[in-house]
Image (tube, rainbow over all chains, first blue to last red; front, top):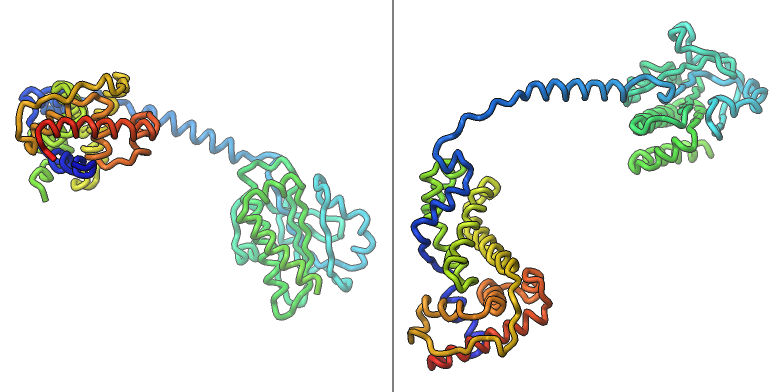
Amino acid sequence: MSQKDLDKLFRDALGEGRAEPRPDSWARVAAGLPSAAANGHAKPKRRVLWFRYAAVASVALAAAGLWWTRPSDTTPNLSVAATSLAHEAISRQEASLPQLAPTAPSPRRSSVGTAPERLVGANPAALSPAKAMPNKFGSVRAELAFLERMSPVDFDERVPLIPVRERPAEAAAYAANSETPRRRYAQLASNLQDVWSLVRSIRESEASPQVHVEVHVPAAVLQRLNQTKELAENLTESWSTFQSKHSH
Amino acid sequence: MEAWYAHIHGSLHGQLDAQRALYEALAPRVLHTCKRYFADEADAEDAMIRTMTTMFQQLPTIREPKALPAWLRRTAVNECLMELRKRKTERLDEADVPEAGAASTDALHDREALMSVLRQLPDGYRSVFNLYAIEGYSHAEIAEQLGISEATSKSQLSRARQWLQRRLTNFNVQ
């Protein structure tokens, strides 16, 4: 008998089959079942005071949430300047511009303003006193903290960065503090994205208004932002778009 | 659709009669599998009971009743191998293998007789032969299951076959 035949002989004969267990086997199996099933009736369950645990958990969660969202100096503020820049003013104050964002190590700046114009983008009276502050351009900078992602439309409504065709506009986004909490990076990145989107829409409008964009992001924050691939890609794309348009 | 499918629902809800019916339908298959791995009837019975207990505990996770027999068989084999590993089955040399003497029956094609012959093999040989020839495992899988090398698996299978061949030859079966 060949090896294959031998294997087949045993496989065919013993591969499938039945062997009757001893009568007491079921009792042993039943003894291993959960008590309710084995006994055929359930014991009264011990009442668990789950609501106490739930209350404690709720309080803990609420406390954690409050702590997480607490206002602090580390909250990233995005400052959006809605001004038309006077070219002369820029020339005059070029040397002092790097200090726009106090903690920004290397603020980037580019300007495409071409002619002195009066301030048109933002109306100081329209802003609350607490949110309006003069900047070194002699214009008004609206300091806003965006804690939720805003669509360009909302952005338009809430921020005096109005794509008025005949008016050049300037948008500047700041993250002044490098100690921004980790959770806020995504928020900051999306807000920056909103800025880019709006700027792009302005630039692509028929009137082709000149747009000046400043982004002041501490290197540490930018590094963290870049760790989020998708957001980093968005930023890169928008920045590239801007740069390419700017070069023309 | 097999008749025992109907008892799954009741078993899941802890109905003892349904559980017993399911046990009576499936336990004989499990015991048959376990008997191939143990020389001693009681050991096979113990492995069957552990397998069935596991089945009732895991029943909520088994979605397809059709898959239950295959699951049971795998679990039974694992239970048997686990028990054999606990005993630290010694790998025997050729000299340690019992002589393939005369069998008590000439009806070699009878299942009981073949089962009897198989169970006379040493544990190590029997495990490898079962897993390879009957369960269809590869040597690599057997080596992993038993914690031995593939070469050991192959040599034990070869020796098991030789032993069985001699045994069958004694019964004039070619």
